Image (cartoon, rainbow, N blue to C red; front, side, top):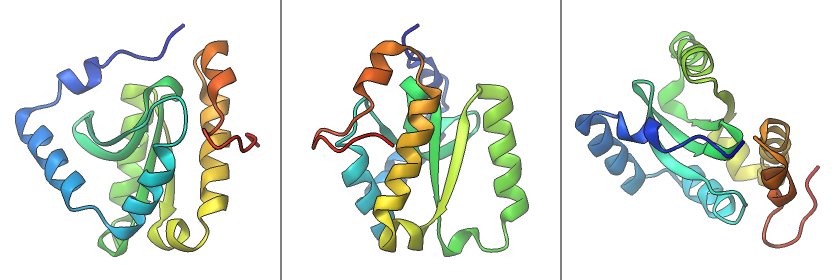
Length: 141
């Protein structure tokens, strides 16, 4: 079964799409560093995607995987983030993994290993599983 269609993006409100574009243009250093690495992975990743009433930081449709980076603005918002994670999991069938910005900045190889492992575990079919390797030939955990 191939990955989900782009219907999730087509249903986003115009307001959410504009906000997602604004967020993509004003990314944090941690988002910029992680995005540079995720772009090298196969299958394809997207950033700042409107989904189920939220805007997620990074999304891989083939693995139905959402990656969120939490910076200082998330401090004190743990309950909201937990609700958001549950909503994405229940209504959209996504797996959500969260990292602190400092993890992406200072422990990037570990973060990438965890993302690859989650993506590999969620891969929709054998075609994607075979391709869950980075373009620089590092092995999938």
